[in-house]
Length: 426
Ligand code: AMP
Ligand code: GLY
Image (cartoon, rainbow, N blue to C red; front, side):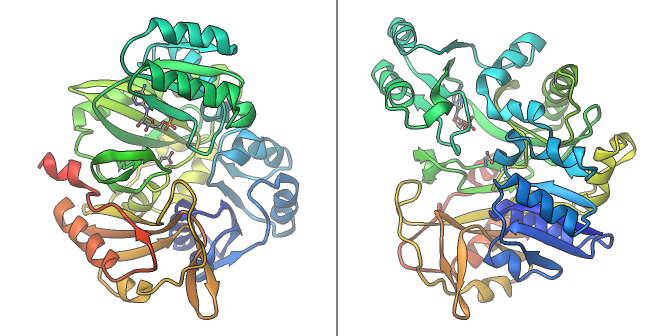
């Protein structure tokens, strides 16, 4: 069977690598993919943008693919799964109505409020003056969120009223995120430790993946602005067995039920970003896809073949499935271009990838690279996701950083404390 995988980041490299290992798969066509994916066995790039739904559909039909996997959120929010399903294709990814759980924070918050899914207190505004008047009544930290998709940048955690008013002006007056800022959610600022909880779902049954944890801020000790994610590990010890059960009962299952009541079957990955504080769990956000970089350590640890799981989800048969995991821990350290998440240079020659990959249990996933001559150069903010497995979290961290130590380019930046929160829990 041929598979079409949509997307081009580190998450898609990890998905392509894992899906290509399936005995059921003859070829993975990745649109548009990246230079790392192009070198994987059984993988081929197609020069079609992840946003160009009509051309992706033509490609899927011409190639007679048996499965379509959608990595990023934008094509899902724009209705890729709806259009493809109507053409008789098997798509692993929710329809637009379901993807709204990520595409509109107002939709997600209202759904959680209505169905009793624990989350921060909030108010919604579509008018700058009313929102500003509301902020002026508040004291202390608050979070201001643009309603729509903003490439992970639309959430502003503000330490006081002055910062919150600046954030509001940025979203609603300067319209930095365009239409995504037509409405804002103003919400209570939560404290605790974050975790990512991702599951397969067929619209009814929820089959959870192992837990994981991202590291959003650019600098060590969670300092500096948020990024797409600077590293991740799995499993996350903050998600104990007890907490896992609470997340399933109070978040995942009721949310999938609530989505089913909207009248469109949610098939795909459902990702809950959670704040965990002494046994209390609250949802920070939902995503309609796998996390990036969480996908990298998760797929490094996944023993099962994900392809039959995705097909079972599409056919509504997930209830009969299980997932097996390698017992080892996995850690992914993101190597980024200096300057990211603001502006950065591109085209810097990268050295040491092959040396890093010669280490046992190490895989270098590409996110923003390009081939130049016979070597790779940087072509994005997040460039590589250096991922390692180890016997225990400490060994996995050591191995990942041993591999990172072999790779360099001019003005490379990475965090040196990925996994530290897990170590602190040992
Ligand atoms: P999101 O783009 O929705 O993933 O949010 C990005 C990040 O903002 C989250 O991972 C948290 O670190 C932070 N965040 C979002 N909502 C809250 C909240 N209510 N309280 C504290 N931090 C938050
Ligand atoms: N790593 C966070 C996300 O994928 O949204």
